[in-house]
Length: 94
Image 1 (cartoon, rainbow, N blue to C red):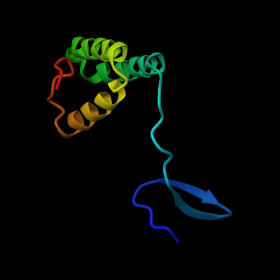
Image 2 (tube, one colour; image 1 turned 60 degrees about the horizontal axis):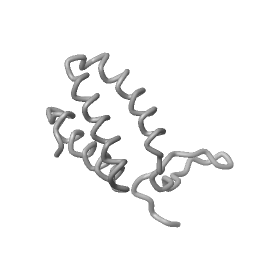
Image 3 (cartoon, rainbow, N blue to C red; image 1 turned 90 degrees about the vertical axis):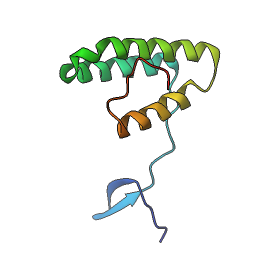
C-alpha cells in the first residue's frame, strides 16, 4: 500500500482511507478574483482595518496576470508567507 503524507479522508466500501489530493487547481484570473472576493468578505469581518491592503493585493494580482503567467505562483507563495507571518501587509509586494 502506498504511503500518503497528506490527503483527504474518504469512506470507501465501509473503510476509512486517505486519498492523495489532486494537484492544484488552475483558476482563471476571473475565477480567482471571484474566490478572492469571497475570502475578503469573510476576512474583513475580523480584520476590517486590512480591507485596503486586500484591495491592493487583488489589484496587484490582476495586474500581474496581464503581464505574466506566473501570477498564481506568486499568489500561492505569498499565502504561504502570510500563513507563517500574519502581520505581513497584503498591500506590499514581497
